Length: 562
Image (cartoon, rainbow, N blue to C red; front, side, top):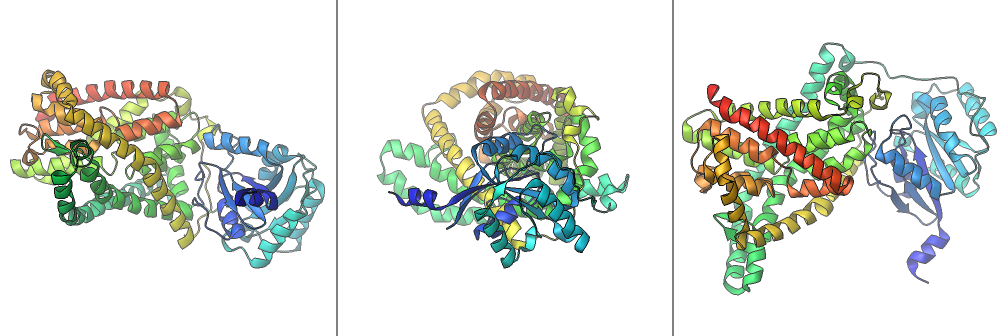
């Protein structure tokens, strides 16, 4: 018998379920004696995870949001059907409401109830007596804890209760805790100052992250390039031709090979992804991100998004792949819109540096302030993304009466180092295990296509079309390449030898068209995997149509401003 089989026999499998933001993952981290693989923020667990100990196999599920129709809720309910021993996690501040929604789902199964956020409840005999009444009527033990600082005796109490678990005997309770504790409103709930502050908190750290990571990449890029020079020289002089094509292929002055682009993906994208994950980790673990979402919800609702979706779109500026995956926690009314926003307007950490570098290069060559052209680009991208979402989002997502998309104000709390590490580690895992393999495959395909001359044929075919956008025919190659890999936008820099030198208005049009015409193949494949090929094809066609229209407006109107 194998070791894994022995583990399955010896260990008791326990499913941990609860609503969003009840502290399930932090609880499992303490019970299992190992870090949870996700952070403790609303809707953060987007898959079912297993944690094995000597006694138990804890199965962590996404937060259940019964008023909505999220993919994460569906996955949690599917897991619930497959397991018999349950840890039902309820939040003390809204205990009656949580029990009313969750107990019907677990009736007849074995388990216990762990009540988190107990530190928010006024301690005393009355509170403990209320838990005892609930425990007697439900038929299972109720254990009250502060999940962020679980004590050793509480860990033992929970494990002992699981080993002697009893059956959930009632789906509805006549007894009630009798309290509901709401967090106090703060400045973010102010009618006027709240949205302004929320926007600043959302945008300013993101901009600081982008520019800070780019400065770091500017320092690291020549260092990595120097390290790779002897390796590339050896490959070019000694390796077979077919391997040279895959690893160090250079066509039309642009590198397509794995060794050419792989290390520089890490140099340019990884710092941005890491910094984004840490900043978002602070926001999520403190509850600040939900306060921001609530402040902005009345405004983003008009374009079909919920306040709960904003953070997912912002994640796209670090890496589109984990951002698209995280939309599993979005309502079915808004998930498609959130994915569309990421694909169209969330310029990832590979696209944005390339775009800003080209705009700065052209501005310097023309004697203009580099910041002006970059700000014009970002403003136009923002406005057209809003218009695109407004025109394509379903009516149900924009309905003010849609309770599926209404966020609730959470408690604020100080972040913990463990939670920040979990957030960063999860994002890194998604970056390396989901984005990188697809990127490597695309490098191989692009190298083969470039070597066979297919990209040249494609660019030649659409070259005459560039005149419609007031662009030279040579602009077609960067547009084609950017549809595969967004770093192809680099070819628009005149010094790099790509497109014919262009005016500021032409450059703005070119980088905008290349950036939004289609999402890169990594993003497109991720969207197809998360939804289906038919929906993805429709999204790509629709995005291309709007991108062409917005680019035409820019092509023939930007010269009035620039």
